[in-house]
Length: 142
Image (cartoon, rainbow, N blue to C red; front, side, top):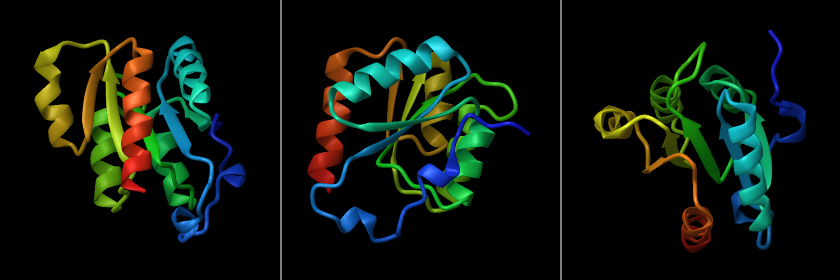
């Protein structure tokens, strides 16, 4: 199975969150390469290191390989493993990263996606103010 996620570049020491001034890391989970590119550009404006996964299964496998992130932007509708399934599995694995659901689907899907373990839910496309607020939330919680 090929993966767009490079696990070796993201392995973290479990105590890395204690490092003062460490670069914040984000995982963009979306099957649409244009959406990943847009989210990557927005996150980089705030100095975040970005990594990508094309589906929920890649996100779960990255975490099982030892990677950890401060922020996960999770699409809902993806092949292989959707965002709801991936979020639930990550939370069952005790992943405590901030997970923001990002979808083009309407409000009807919001409750079940939030119930899977999201911290926030947003409609695509993300605006720069939303990304700024997420980054500030991570920094405030650090």
